[in-house]
Image (cartoon, rainbow, N blue to C red; front, side, top):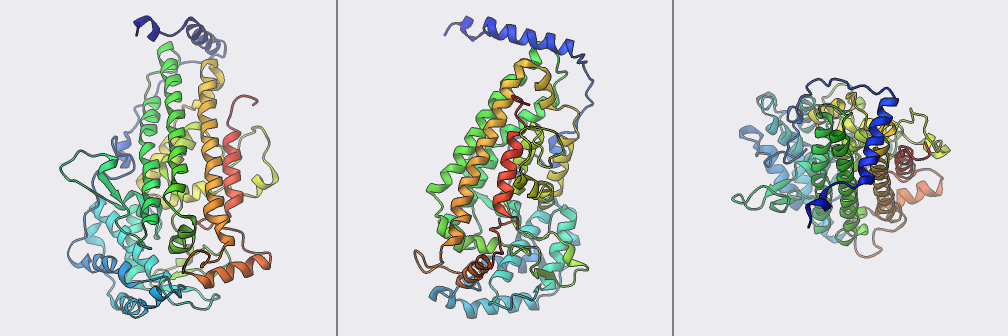
Length: 475
């Protein structure tokens, strides 16, 4: 290939020059940028992003009692509402497992507080144990709160406060921390990581679900590098900087499209019926049945009703939050953008994304806060720089396309499956839960909810529409 062909075309030079001239006319002045803290300060690794560089170490000494219970759980427990023959065969072993948990002392977590990875491991183990304990319990009256024993509740809340994360199962527990190295002698790579070390259902569909989520998160690591490079450019007013920003927005569009392809591929490896009936019930948090349901009480924890206990959700992905912040997606409807929000947009939970950050590790939430506090809005830069408007809009439209796809996936895996019965294909669990849902629909109550307890349809549509409103063309 000729070197000449690698150079920008005259048209590109003209566009960039016009952009610089426009910036001058707009009285854009070069602003000094203070030295920013490194993402590493927020436990964001340059190679692994929000994943730890190595698998979390097993808890030592007295805490091994928790590790042993987690290792035994999948073989001894089944969903409490599962009346299948296999589930019934585990009832005795499940009751023994649960009675042992009840008999445990409350273990002081102070020896773990100086080690971030051990704290994360403690959260991981205890959160999984809480969901095992709650959802393996035999069916009880729906109008009474479920009591999580203090042997689990007190240490989970203690380590959660140290980490700045919700004391319940989260995206970090199911995806970011739920992996092991396949071959220790091989270089670090996604292909050398085995996800789904711990599974509720024991199905390959569950493992594939975690792996798909992890693959999307891993692909987003390059986005974090692009964002960091943008925020550390010496200035944004010269030809070199604008050229780089344009190229990086093109790279960003490609990454978002790749994530869409990854999410789409889940349909080939995760059966919707298995996901909805065998896996999803284990994810449910205290408010999964709605804000007025009795929920959970954490024994030994003062004012436990104020705890964040919604359970894991894709909305807790820090990579996607970072992308929203970078592209200036206005989920709270604070900006005047077109088209105007619809009535359903206005009814949606505008605080959902912010609330989901409380389910992230505290350092990751601080990282997002640092991104939001930067004075460099790429959307504002694109507004006043003609050469950046199209690359910016392309990235936003790619994100809208991803959210359109997410809506279709959610419709298939949650909304459509909520209208099926547990035994539609085979002997599947939670028949009683299905009956409750059918009664709720018949009474006009009970909107279909995401695993984080949100009204799914309203939320996803609002997120998609907020993304579309960020597009510059027409605004």
